[in-house]
Length: 164
Image (cartoon, rainbow, N blue to C red; front, side):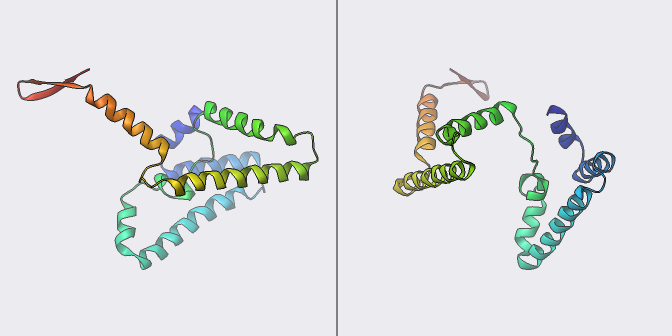
């Protein structure tokens, strides 16, 4: 996992694509993976050209930001943290435990019902909130503000040093 992140950080997207293509050639000949990689790069470039015609100012603004931060074609499909992936799997398994012993269609229906209920609950919380931030983010901000009031700043010659 760490090697993949290191490769992504050190190499350009074209070099990473080349590594994936070479690995696909060695291990999975004829699988179509090479074509998919090339196609996604071409689609991204074509999409950017269309976007440039649509809104040149926004295109120039996006061009200054590395594509790995905003373009789906540059996103990694690998989990950044195994702990996060493990926690997500545990939560998912905990939610489907009631339907595990049932037929696959019934299990899928249980998952669908859970997701629909979860979406409705989240939307209700969002709609009931009149603040700009969510209740949890507001709580974090208030805690941070409370901690900031305890800061003591001391003027030391021409610079300010903070002390807790």
